[in-house]
Image 1 (cartoon, rainbow, N blue to C red):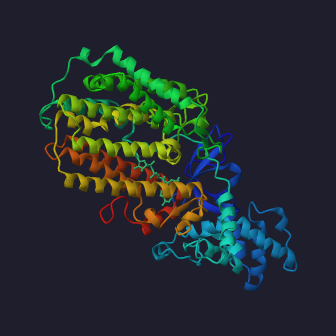
Image 2: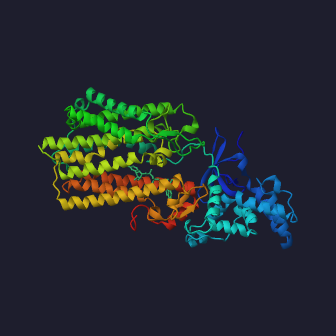
Image 3: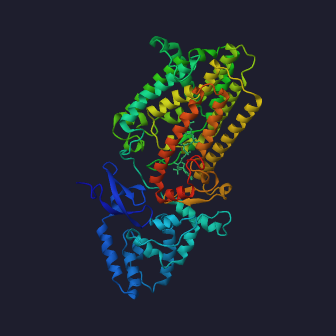
Length: 614
Ligand code: NDP
């Protein structure tokens, strides 16, 4: 095999990035373009390594037998010899003898620095089951009897100072620690370790049911939207009362499509305005960081002013309600055209720009999940723009149109209490998303998923036309609720919002600046990648507290529609399914990223979304 030394499936020794430690790994694939091997560590962590960071197992076994044959007195010297021979060790230490104590001292200090990552690795990489079960959040000082860790053992055994460093990676509160300064300086070393260069290789594990599943979803998602909208228009929207299909020609109107285009490009223009700060996203696989303009709130205010002006000049927003299905069809046609454009342009994109999850080589799968991670036209980021602007702000405009339609159709001087609640709750949700626009940069949609049919259709059709279902339902099916019921639903929404917002902010702040003094009370598990996993606060309550808050809010949005039909509860039912599936996807990615540290986190925080239930 020219250009490649190790075969798929071969068990070799892989260097842990940023350290001199070698662990037993299995080669899972090889990227011919980037010349990188994807290897899997025993704990499940997957990394991409260069060939120079991989050794055959035989060279390590040979060294081990040499040292074990030594007498105890010779063992200590042979230990220093074998340590000096360990692969990747800096040349300076090679000729060290016991008499060179000053150098030894310096070296010890250096070892502490060099292996600050390795120490965390040691804490994390104790694969013996007993150790894992014994784990209670306190530092452990035992070392494992595993040949894969032999080099690390040799470095650590005599060094008491290192034990001290190990203790610094414990889960105690950072605030209470006397040696805060030292911890932070060492933590900085730990965090400063350059993230492993991971160039996307072919996506092997297909999600969403693979090719067949994604093909079905491409057909099923639009069909579901049209079914829901047709149902909502019926006097009796019972599930078994299947709606009759409208004539095809009634679904399309060029004028409606023109209004949709106008809306889309108006939002694009707002996005391009040079107002609002510019921030950097998380590092990409090649270490590069993209820049994003944060001006969603300005876009919202400008849109509100434009809608206000339209209403002032007697424009009937009711038009949106009357042509709702045609708008949905226009948005769907546009999102399909956009997805085709995105896929075609992704074929020319460099390998490093492809999405980790959408590079399977199967057309239908990559088309659905999104082939290119961050497609841009100049500085115009298509995915980032679509995530928050046309669909999300559009959702609010639709809600407002439904509110006005309700007043007009039922001849009301005030909207119903149910309609006010639905509009207010969802307004809060969208304004919150725009206010915290920066937080979207750390979500899966931006960092992992490509931009393809899934997100294009989701952002432009599913969000505005399905999420507004409760308001649409209330226009045709007036529901009366009492003030105490309204108050109880409002409390429920506030509880959900509080959990959702504080959990998201806690994680986002921690990811942005782990040393933030405001987070000093929080404990975390360090991981070998340099990022920590919070185990107290919201993220110690359940593993996805933000999903819990989101689901509680979803329920509060449906309750004002009463209990006559299940249709307005579609959102909360679908949302639970979506977030349970999303949570499973995220867990899978986190297990790959963090290996044993993730398992420990799961032991500490056993419930995924619903405490004591799931
Ligand atoms: P999250 O914001 O929940 O992010 C998950 C990531 O958080 C993980 O991949 C991991 O990434 C990090 N993480 C996990 N556990 C910990 C921990 N203990 N400590 C620190 N970091 C941790 O994911 P989503 O992008 O799915 O959701 C973002 C928000 O959007 C949520 O509130 C969700 O409810 C909402 N949402 C709304 C939808 C809607 O249609 N209304 C649809 C989807 C989501 P890493 O370690 O790499 O940082």
